[in-house]
Length: 151
Image (cartoon, rainbow, N blue to C red; front, side):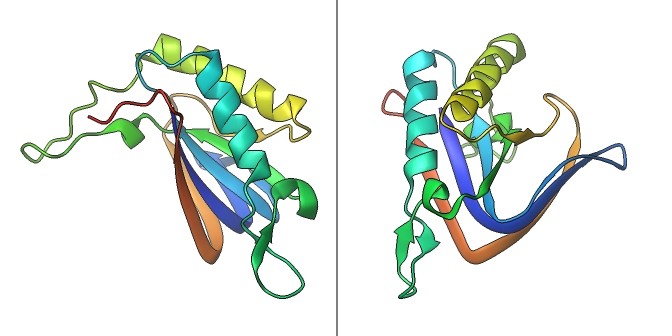
């Protein structure tokens, strides 16, 4: 499982021109599910995201977590995180989980975030989305669960 985590001052998702989700200060998580991912990958990513110390403390150091700043969370499914463009010009998505498996794990991840105290705002699975964000910092972190294999 792969997550691109962006610290945001705001974020919104639109589908067919209609806003489906929005948050203020917090984290946007673009979530990719790989073939073979399971509950352990979900738990790892959820725990890591909510505990990441990537918000400024009183001295301007990245020392506070989403929990510490009582921020909000947005999770958007993004299979293209597993695109492998090393050969040719068209990425291969062979490592990405098929949609049925990916949706199950995406839902599991959203439930894991909710159990951790951060019920996420969400994009719409398999929809063409417009994601608008104000990256705060900018701060962007890439997380891979321990069982993620490189392409």
